[in-house]
Length: 81
Image (cartoon, rainbow, N blue to C red; front, side, top):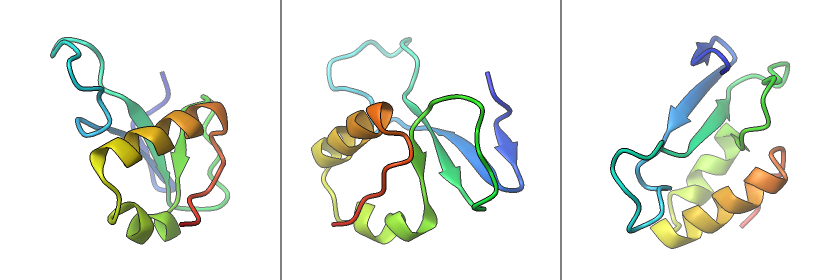
């Protein structure tokens, strides 16, 4: 597994993104919050960028899970609306 934090990015585990009805002992979904454009994680976890945070704040838990699932396939994709 990658390091949990770097001055350029932070690995985050989220209870909001966990599917409803899953067991508590299952791993939480993880993603990177990229703080610097020169940071490229070695793994293929979804990546979020600071400019996306205001848009994500307006989403429901279900919408956030859908976005997360898309970013699993396309880790570098950006939320635009």
